[in-house]
Image 1 (cartoon, rainbow, N blue to C red):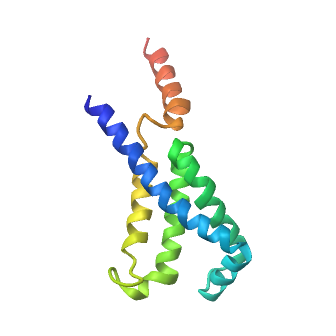
Image 2: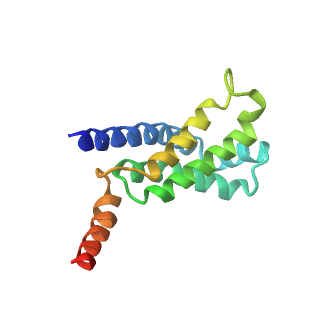
Length: 142
């Protein structure tokens, strides 16, 4: 029973994080890659066009993958890098809390990492990879 509750809680956490990233990716998509690249250039992000494209793809497609639990560690590391970039380039100067503070990007990045490496059994990663490993381990132990 407790394991099921844990798995549902992990799924809800993944959904919550993914919704926020998806919303931010949608804002960037609506603005366009060019406008996002211009903004990235103004704040000093290297290769702003490439970075803008990659961040939009990560925040949109990565969010879908995060919800269904596919390639969780890869998406989580991407999210963490995304949020580290936002923290360093935009939010650090404003402090932890208050207008422009980095508390949200800190929580998003670190929570994504935690969920990315512990996504629970309600994930495609568990179905595709962990079950297969468990089956192989059981065959070796037999």
